[in-house]
Amino acid sequence: MTKHIITVARQFGSGGSDIARSLADKLGIKFYDKELISLAAKESGMNPEVFEKIDEKAANSLLYSLSMGLYNFGNGFSAMGDLPVNDKLYIIQHKMIKRLAEEGPCVILGRCADYVLRDYPNVINIYINADMEYRKQHAVKYHKIDAKRAEQIVSRTDKTRANYYSFYSGQKWGQAQNYDLCINSGKMSQDDAVSLIKSYVELRDKSVK
Image (tube, rainbow, N blue to C red; front, side):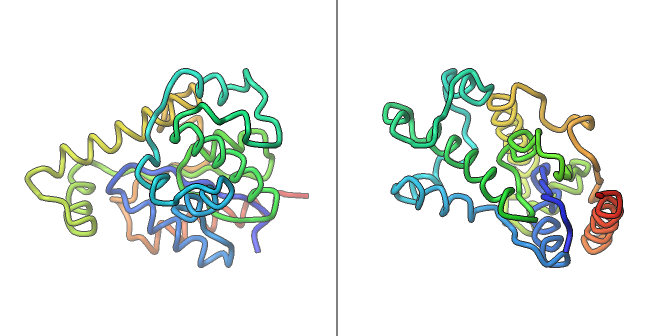
């Protein structure tokens, strides 16, 4: 088993979600994507469907201050009473991601996990991208998106993810310097992409003393 926590960020339509899930299976470790919504809802006592609807939506300037460490979250959630639901979701997920990382190796998809875990030495950050034509075709085939609107939806989804990441981290989404390994999934099969990342993780494991 790997010693690392692996975060995966991805462009919409790149197949990054499937790659991340398959990677977790190959490494024999847990995978967290929508599971974080259920865990956050359970932690807060709120309806999971509410969190599902506002997942990955940027909020207000107060949350930016919180995410940049200008306020102390504390150990409880009572101070969040007046925050919008999407702000509460981010804070709870922020805490949840750290807790899961401390429990042991896993793969975490999206949700600024690379930023949240930036001070953890055993984290590997992966970014999956592909050219627009590949992503349009993938979105139509696997996400059942109308082919005529595919490029618009792909671009809009990427913009939402970029805004979410920028809002909560203060950094630009998709910049190579924020990741350990960037892969163009349109240039290889999903299995090859998984094997490439797995090989990289194993090399990093060897370097851990």
